Image 1 (cartoon, rainbow, N blue to C red):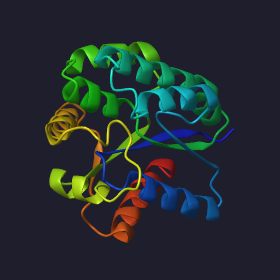
Image 2 (cartoon, rainbow, N blue to C red):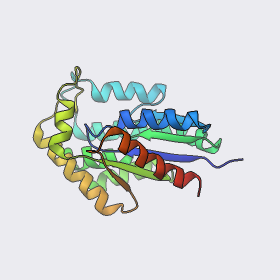
Image 3 (cartoon, rainbow, N blue to C red):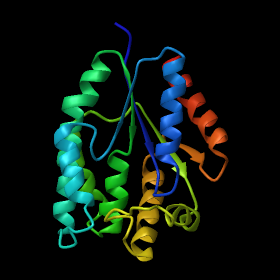
Length: 207
């Protein structure tokens, strides 16, 4: 049986994750690769319901620890129901967001602590870490400018500038600790970012 892979695209709001991931998945599928495109939080029924709770702008009273635990619960269900079976079947799973987002948003943005959030997520995912994580790096101000015109802002999009600044600090800590992360300058054109990401993915799966 051919080998499966689990590949994650990470980055702060406005880095272009969804746009880039959509194009990458379409390109790889046209080339004959078996691709499973998914996202966090969400990807399967239970996890999508948790996503709706987490991101609903009305849920302003949600405690930060509740938020962190909901993300971890969604992640676990997504892994066991979708990601792990697809990888074991020899498919290439490409996911928007994973543990790094929790480390940045809840660990730093919510002030819960990097190491505590890492422990929660280590429990949630076991040994199911990605084969590769690609980080789309964007200047904080540029990223926020990109999301400013969105017609709908979820609960996290609507947070203060201070919160988003802390999230970016969190991602810097992620990159310091996880040095095998592949970093792409997301201020480049979409085509350039896509080509760089595709090269990294193909180098992995053709190795």
